Amino acid sequence: MVPLDEPEFDRWRAAAERAAGAAAQGAAGFFEWACFLHEQSAQLAVKAILHGVGAGAWGHDLAPLEAAAGDAIGPAWPADLGPPAERLARFYLPTRYPDAVPGGVPGDRFTAEDEQSAARDRHTIVAAVDRAWSALVAEATGGSPL
Image (cartoon, rainbow, N blue to C red; front, top):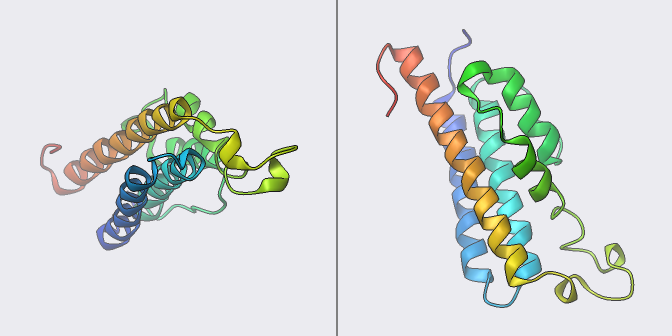
């Protein structure tokens, strides 16, 4: 087993938490940005665990990053995170760029329901990251998961 890099995990995980906090602040009508920030929070959390185990965490598409986490972590990684990762990945580009939205701007296309769905998916992924990290730390230290 590769030694865990807790400082690197903590650094990326803190960035994920800040993105989640910004999403909560921006949800008041700026649904496109809140959706993007929920995606960013999940992406940063997945990258946290990938960096924490010494695996590559390159790119910005959450779906392949989530799959890479499953490959790198093994049984501690839940098998059912593909759908929420794929749903969140849809918010990476069209939430930010007017040319990604034909005939309008992103703010015209994203709703409170989109933001709520993104928040649920972000929570699912971030909670899974935290559980998997706790299990890996417990395994590495001979203790039990937190």
